[in-house]
Amino acid sequence: MNALLITAAIDFVSLLPFAAFGAIAIGAWVVVDLVFNSKTKTESRLERLNNPHQHKSDVVKSSGGAKEGITKLLEQASPKISEALKPKNEKEANKLKQKLDEAGWRTENATQILSTLKVLSAGFGFFLGGGVALIGNGANLWTFVYSLVAAVLFMFIPEIILGFVAGKRKQKLFLGLPDALDLMVVCVEAGLGMDQALRRVADEMGESHAVVAGEFKLCNQQLQMGSTRETVLTDLGRRNGVDDLKTLASVMIQVDKFGTSVGKALRVQSEAMRTRRRQIAEEKASKTAVKLIFPLVLFIFPGIFVVLVGPAALTMINEMLPLMSGQ
Image (cartoon, rainbow, N blue to C red; front, side, top):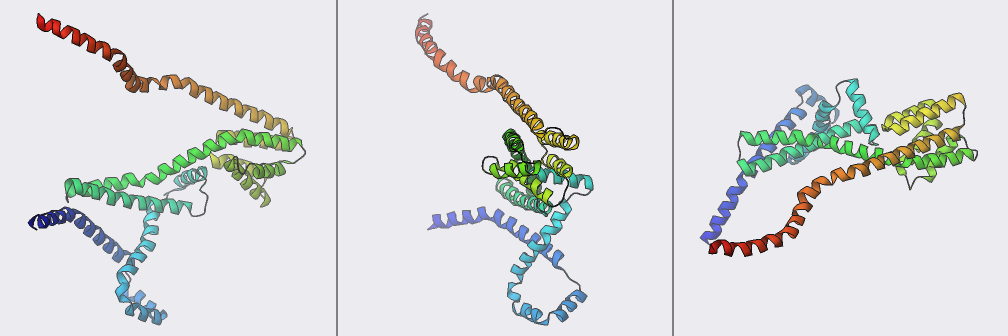
């Protein structure tokens, strides 16, 4: 019985740092709630005059005030905090918009959503870092410092994920463009115009190269909305950040201006892209031998050395030690 009581007391003491950290977090939450939800007497009186029935129901349901305060905090605090993380000038806004476009995230509120994700990630890092610091150091000033550092580090995670998604999307565009251009050459030489060829390629490549098909569909939609072909092609090269798309857009704009052969220009561009892709593959293959040195030296060579030299070393030890001891 005494052992059980001692064990329970030890468990209770071990939970005290977590309880203290939770109490501090809840207190901060309540303070922020009061700051964001504070109203003047004039505003409260006007609200009661405009909605008397709603005011009565709020008085009756006053027991649920804490839950409603937390809900209001989530609705009001997140946009206000995310507003502080938004770009401060036009240059930063354009840079962030370019990153979002390259990742394929082109909704109207993409910037606000990214800022909100950064806020949520920072909050998660704060609580995670605080919990780990409480386990290691207990409740002190360094725990709070570690929590802030974790919050700052976690705040950059959404941008890192955004860059990773953008890189994968650029890779898919780079690999799918030669096939798309080959199909466009076939469509153009069969008698279709440039707009019809884009639409046909978008329909045919929806399963094999969905990213390229999506970009061509967006171009078709912009053309249907009345945008000029030069504007659409320029925007195609700008929003994706792929050099091959920019080159393709420039070539198609020049072809449209000077009236040269579209099929020939697209075929030359497709061959150039395939040549570049082959050169990149050859470059990676050439770097393989150099990259293999590190795992060979660090992991494979020690094992081979033990297997080959180990038996000989054991034989030498077994033969020489008795002779040396006999002397």
